[in-house]
Length: 379
Ligand SMILES: Cc1ncc(COP(=O)(O)O)c(C=O)c1O
Image 1 (cartoon, helix red, strand yellow):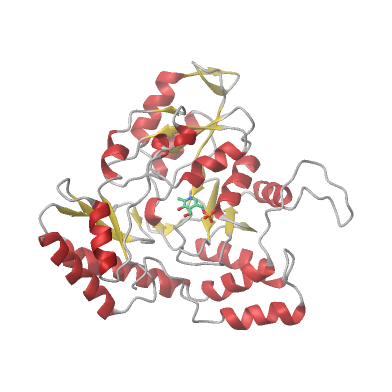
Image 2 (image 1 turned 180 degrees about the vertical axis):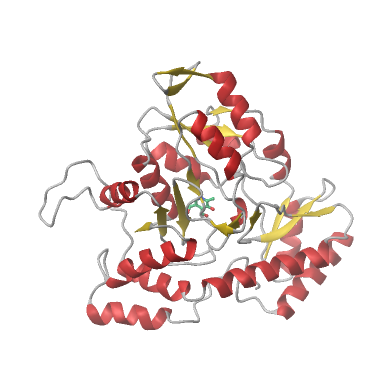
């Protein structure tokens, strides 16, 4: 089977894991955790980082550290993995779902601004939702498939409404924004190191920021809000720190981050070049403001195709391919969430076909995927 996103563990992963076992440092304290934090910060050019047990935990801790409280609203795109919304809900807050832009599949700043303009009022420098009286507390853009959102415009809106930008960059390590790095284009940015991500720790995540206090608050919350080494805690904290075992794998992976991201981009280029001329097939978005980390590549299929049927046909030929995120406003737990109109999210999600994008995929396998898909589409 040619898998969609198979972890590439052919570097120093085993060696570093053995070091953890030999030293007995396997838990949430250890040299690899500190090393991983420094390396993630360096790779994305942020000043500070803290490593956590998952991307979801990272989003949760970053929102809390960024000031989100029970009963607040947080603006997120509806077209995202459900973890973005769940992290908001874990804070006791509610997502305010915003449609994405046609050109990037990231939060549409025009729609966001219109929603805020029409549906909020200001009191003492804070904005409240007119209908529910809930405070709006943050904007959480998602870097869809590794492509940074339109951060300049979102930053302007954030400044106007006094809202921090906490970015869900789960799959975006290695992405670029306006020719620079992505570590400081939001107040905090969260990465996932889940098994299907470009860099994996098995499970894990990291929060980066140039704001030292924010990172310290997030780390404190994720470490049971413990004060010192004795059993003294000053808040209701969480056990959300990354373990040394996870970090050992992550450190080995980070040694190859540029190689992996480069390979991801070559996979995207190959699929694009081979599939662009097929009738009723279009490509994943690209943007002139950013360079995607190309987490997953694939194509958008016209209405005459059923993506699920194409996936089944590919599976019969030993190729794993999948549909993509069902928007959050169509998910049971968030059916009643505040939201904008959703023409783009509702159109695109049923048309996306993600194709094998593992960093270990060979040229022969890529060619086989393309030939097989072309034959299936021909019918
Ligand atoms: C956009 C987005 N946000 C959050 C997450 C959650 O990350 P994790 O699985 O590490 O909790 C993911 C994971 O796939 C994701 O794609």
